[in-house]
Image 1: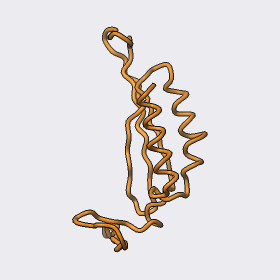
Image 2 (image 1 turned 90 degrees about the vertical axis):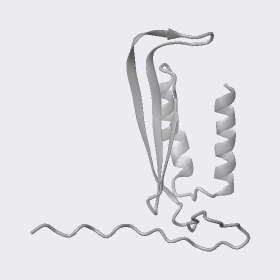
Image 3 (image 1 turned 45 degrees about the vertical axis):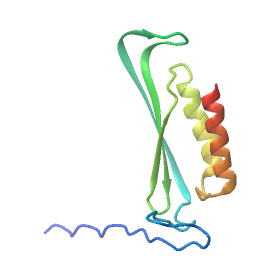
Length: 125
């Protein structure tokens, strides 16, 4: 006899004063606490060299970064599309960024502002 499937995880929305909710699901801050950061570095060799005015590549690279919250919500971003810096970016994520955000709510104002600033800096470089 096979055991029954586990019950699906239920995410309960909470009401928040002063915020428009519309059809947006809102979770409480405790449930949006980051508890794990995962990276997957991908490097795929290309059949030929591709070049542009400011780049040349023989590999197509990206880093998939996933943030896992206490309630099971997962955020995913793709970064680090340069071959030479890929290892350094993964180390930066795990050694510097992850320790700064683990245990914090994704809605912590300083975290939100820091992510916006980091995004701006990365896109400007």
